[in-house]
Image (cartoon, rainbow, N blue to C red; front, side, top):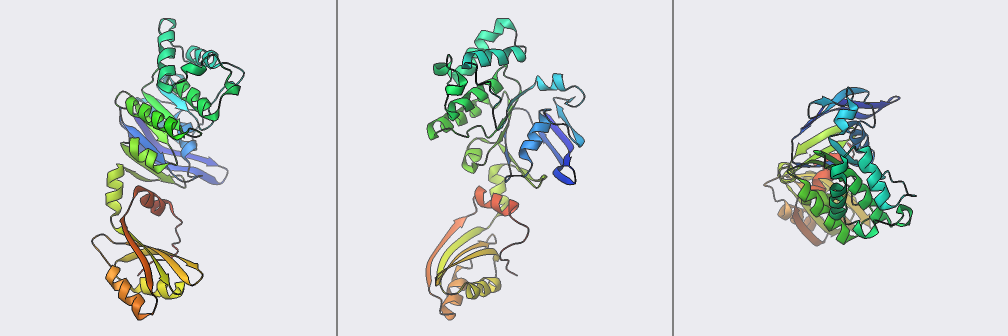
Length: 315
């Protein structure tokens, strides 16, 4: 179990991580989401003990990582965004060195190296220098290093960066197989990837925790739908209509010549399509297309982490 209490990191007058509190249960896969600069990597660096917090604490299986970092780190396998590779080594030399650093018993070392190599599919490049590998294979070697020792907590920061679609699918399957016996924290900007493998999602923005929930419940809790439509007419006219339409909560308009493209968020159990159609007709603004869709995880994420100042809000 991972317990994060009042975790804070400040640089000068800027607070990169702002009093985070959450608990991660054993055996589940957690997606760690947020826009660039949200504080994800800083938080993961504090969880792993690579960075000291300004305030608060992290406990790994009851051990405060600030009080006993060596003991706590034995429970963690970590792949940072930039894998810590020694490029003058071969893959085999590097992973053997990593196994020694992790103090894996000599009697178990060979079997663990073979298992980690098989899971990450680096057997074919075992004798090659890391500096001669593609970015995708370097990422795989970094994953193998994190998995070595098979610690109860695995933290992956953008683990599929640089991989092709087939390799991404393989890494997803690997992460799935690690659930149950390992607690996995996965940071990624690829929302379909996170949705496909994660049991729960943590969303942070500007260093603060916005959500801790399952992907399905996050989508359902936001409710509502999205309308996308194109109108021949001025954006100002469409804006006035949407502002006056019941059930429309927020909208975004783009003027392109004499066309206005609109995206409007709609309250749950509300269907203002007919009202919008007749209002546009009365304003002599022909409606060219309209599409309704349920809110997706991507839309929920963008709504939660969007700028505080909305581009358009209905009354």
